[in-house]
Each structure stands twice: as structure tokens, then as C-alpha cells.
Image (tube, rainbow, N blue to C red; front, side):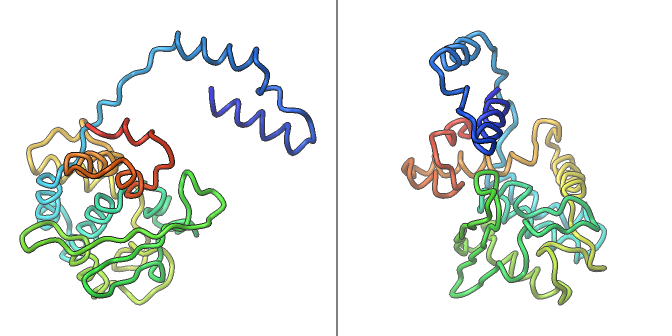
Length: 233
């Protein structure tokens, strides 16, 4: 409903017409619709640090080569600690890289810290960009900085998206999901209970359980409202 209303508002604006959605009648109608509409709870399970550690280890078994294992390990860890949406770091297909996903020049490594420039996002369609800063984890813990360092050492010196295969083709969402599920099954976990958003859900849940403030949790996932609460399990 909100998407349709936003479309009507946008069309009215570009056409120089008044916004019909701003009337009291429409607002009250939408409020009534919201009260009558049943919302299905989001049952996707979060990725926890322990599951993440298992995924990082399982890549060596579920992937076809050491390169692939290093690629997926870096992608998993960055997705979790960066609270990334798939559209921010995964190409739509192996051959269509797209200009909106992470690229090599969006990565900065210095002093045990990893900086990622998210070019576009669901809430940043104009591409203003946002920086995500990740820190090196203690020894023995899954670490996005070490994982990225290992991947960049073997990544082909090509342009395009950051996450690519040895032959230069892009890591697609489809491939990410396939290996993610294979790793979950290898760990004895029900793959259907998780989704790609489980990394983002896990990031919000982990941050909240650590006692971070609302402002800090919102900053991690680049949330602009209290919508982050729906991610916390």
C-alpha cells in the first residue's frame, strides 16, 4: 500500500498536480486498512556469531576450490558485520556486474580496519554513498578484516564488482544463496529457516544483545528510523 501511495505522490509531483494522498480522508483510510490487515511475522532466523564462524569454516568443504572458499568467506563475513543488503554487494548475475555494488576502489584497509563505501542502497537511490567501518576481531573469532585481506591477495586484478570468481565473472545473488544454503546444511542447520536478510537480522540482533544504544545500532545498518527493531530477535 505504501509503495502505491508513494508512486501516486511522485507522479503527481512531476506532473505539477496536488498530492491526493495528503488528504485527511486518504490518511484515515490507510490507517483503517493498516488496522485490519494482518501482518505475517518475519520468521527468518538470524545469523549468530557462532553460525557465522561455522559458515566461514564450512566454505572449505562446500566450495569447489580454495579461491571460491576465500571468496565466499569474505562475502559472508562482510555481509554480517557490515549489515549489508544483497543489492549492495552482490551482482544481479554472473555477467551483469552493475554499477551499484561494491567495487575494488570502494575498499580501504589500514591499521587493522576495513572501510567499505556502499554506493547505493534501498534508502539511498540517488547514490550519495555511505562508509561502513569494520574492525579486526580477536584471534579465533570470525574476522571480516582478515577475510577481506585474504581475498584481495588472490583476487584477479580486474575492475567491476569487488566479489568475482577466478575467471572474472561476478558473484551473483543466486550463487551466494546456493553456497549459503549448502554451508548451512553442512552445519546441520535448516537452510529454509534462513534467508539472505539473516545476515542483516543477525547484525542488528548481535549489536542489541551487546548493549549498544539505539543510535549505534541504527548506524550499523544505516537505518534512519526505528524500523531496525523489526530485525532484532
